Length: 210
Ligand code: PRT
Ligand code: ZN
Image: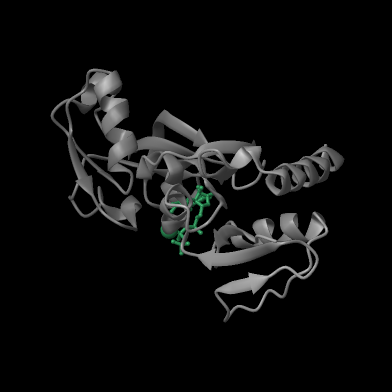
């Protein structure tokens, strides 16, 4: 019998809820922090624990059949994968933000300005759609400190409570995309009986929460 593989985040904001969801689906597995693969004892499934950034490509390339990852990461990596189920956790927004004393008042004010982000692909498409031409500065983390350091005029980053923006003297200015954790699968995998069984179990768990 074949064994499916599902990739979830090894540690970070989506790890705990992903593990909890799979356990609530009745799947038995050990969740050792040290192991990268956990076999499920009562379903033909293996769980791969990965950096979230790697999950979309692993699923696209068939190294994993399924994955749980934020929509922001899927869109940024521009992969060909199937959206199977919205999971309702990991909710956040990708927003443009400016300093509290910024003179920018609308999107067109970003023309010719620099924007720091870890999401150059999504931001680039958003700016193009809105006819704005800015200098995108890609940095991999601590984006919120960029304006204070004089590295950029604005930022585009993930916001959930808004606390990080506030404590860095920034204010949200425009919504670029909203995101949540999504169950993705490689193209065609949704036809598989085992995948359908798993999606049904996930949907029952999510329905029971409503
Ligand atoms: O190690 P690995 O690469 O796997 O993890 P990571 O550090 O890249 O990602 P992680 O664990 O931080 O986030 C995983 C996913 O959770 C993201 O891709 C989003 O889909 C989702 N998510 C939900 C968030 C947040 N909420 C969030 N608040 N991701 C990041 N943040 C950060 C944000 O970047 C900012 O620095 O939290 C800060 C803002 O939070 P607030 O509450 O102050 O607004
Ligand atoms: Zn990551």
